[in-house]
Length: 234
Image (tube, rainbow, N blue to C red; front, side, top):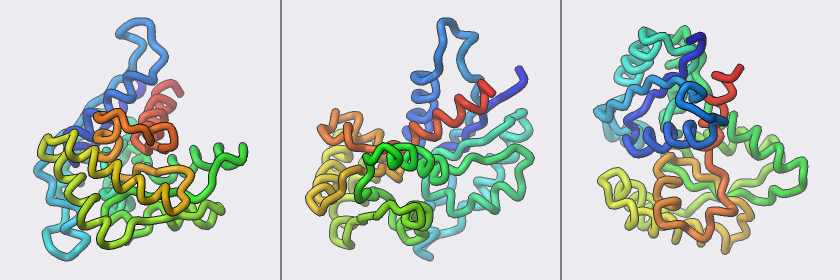
């Protein structure tokens, strides 16, 4: 086994399983042995990333560094982080890892740029945590590439995104999905032609309810899964 994909997960657990499921679903395979070998560190006791960035909780960095170290010890030849907000600490994590750590936002930009060449991309609605939006994880990549971004307002974040995201984290996936679909509707009403699901709980919720908006969604988890497959297949 020359290549092994590592997943730094637990943020949250369902998002980690979603990434693994998408790696399996999108790998060309006719037998078990054709699938991508994966080792996952799905440990959810990492301090809350959103609260840390808001100055309301401890940093998750040490806990994430432990996960990265375990994945390196297991022989991972690349690492994917199953959380968008955690990419705020991407450079610090990469500095402690011998295995390259994929960057979900940069990979997603490549997907959008391929669509842009076909003239398919208008304003993109970002559905993400406060931390991801405040850190401009996606805006600072998309806007220089000529892709306009629309973001929810403070009330929509407080009444739709946050309760929707945390509903999924506690297992109320349908409730969370419906709240997030309502938020997505507001972005479409403002002119978003594509919805970028820039929090790994969001595709879990929208797929669970079979949202009618899925055809206009860009799923960074899927983009990350495809990058993991490409790494293994070389």
